[in-house]
Each structure stands twice: as structure tokens, then as C-alpha cells.
Image (cartoon, rainbow, N blue to C red; front, side, top):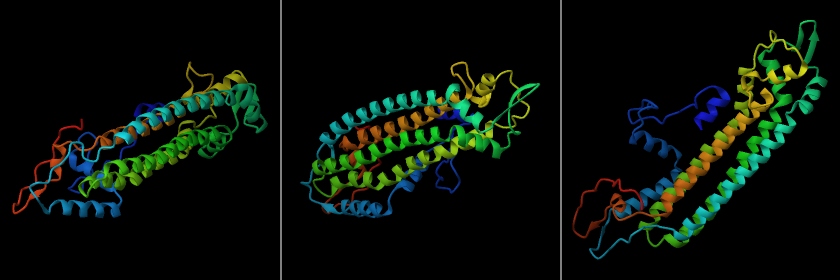
Length: 318
């Protein structure tokens, strides 16, 4: 995703690391478990956190020696099969929608379509030296040019990401319902579903903020990078048109406008891919349940004994 962001903006993806336990922000190059835990905690719904605390407290109570765990605690095989099928279909649909998006906007941003529109809005001037844009290229002028040429494209791209977000939001609810029906047997088996429920709204809000920032990012990037055009003189109107959005002018594209659209679409697709990858990995982790070594994170005490908590296992879910 950083590569697509940099191709579009010429900057690295902004990072906002979670505060470390010391209160100082963590460095991007040296994340540790405390920083990750702090970030995850920030996503959690406090109401669900109370439920998780209550379940953990109940787990610390003595139980009979006859109590036994089962392999794959809170596993959801039916929900697991469902997510594998649905996410793959959503991924294919997303790829198709972006192919259609690119094809549509290549045509709309072509010289024969966009140039007459900009000409009617009096963006061009011609004198003895050649063709140039009206004005000097101030931020105000660049913003107006963006609004008349690329704003609708960026809004359409944001809608593509929004549609995918909607699919994933609905799928979350459906998966959770199936998972809960087949996995919850007792208080102990409620822990993993409670953790997922606590994080769900927070992670959705995180992706929502990224999606909603796309429009502002497109506007800011254009007005910042396409600036001071008063010294740019071109030999023909078509040459001028190709070079208006000069930071995105490339041999692969017919104009800078098309290059802007393509790199913006690359970024939007990268965000969608990151979203799909996150949810696919998340449900792959949750729906496999907890293996016996992982269940040692929630130790039980035998009657009359006071066992010390064991360290969390690093054994991955099978």
C-alpha cells in the first residue's frame, strides 16, 4: 500500500504508532508487543472489555479436577468455510469493478472528452509564444481546476472502496452469527467471540477513516503538486493538455490526467486489498479456535489449589 501511496503522492504512507507503555510514541522501526497491544486496546469497545474481564475473572475461579478442555476451543468450521468462499467472491467483484472504473475514466479523461470542457470554461490561452493555462497556478486556481476535471473521478473511486467496505461490514455480522451458534458452549468458549466483537467496530472505523480521507487526499495532492504553471508554454493544445497534470505524466498514459486517475486507482485498490487481507487473516485466526497450548493463556485452578498463570504460548493456530 505504501508503494501505491508514494507513486500517487510522492510521499511515504503516514504512520501514527500507538503510544508505548512509557507514554512516548513508538518508533516505526522498532514496534514491540506493548505498542501493538496498546493499539489493539485502543480499538476495543469498552462495553465488551467489561464482558471479557468478567469472563476472565470467572475463569480464575477454582473448578473441579474433572473439567477438561477440548481441542479448537471456539472453533467455527462452518463459518470458516463461509468466509473462504465469500471473501474470494468479494475480491473478484472488487477487481472487476476497478477494471470498469479505469476503463470508464480513461474515456472521460481523454483529450477528445475533457479538453473541450476545459476550453469552454476558459482554462486555455494562446499568444505568440504558444499555449498555456490561464492564471499563475496558485492553490486556489489549482483547486478549481481539480474540481472541474478530477473531483468526480476521485469521488467515484471512493465509492468503489465504500462498496467493498459495505460488503465486508455485512459479512462480519453474518459470520459472527454463524460462528456464535456453532462455537459457544460455555463461559470459556465465549472469550474468543467476545474479543472479536470488542474489536469489530474499532477496526471498521479505522478503515472508514482511511476511505473517507481519499477525496481530501486527492484534492490536496493535486493542488500541492500541480503548482505555478504560469511559466509552462506548450507548442500545441494537445501537448498542453497532456502536460497539465505533469507530475503524473508518463509514457504509459495519454496524459497527466490519466496518470493521476491510474495512480489514484492503484491506491484505492491497494486499500481494498489491505482490507480484504486483514479480514481474511483475522477470521482465519479466530475461526480456527484456540489450540490446547493457546488455551494456557486462560489457566484454570483445580479445587483447593492456587496455580500461577502460565506465559502465553507462541504456538500458531493450526
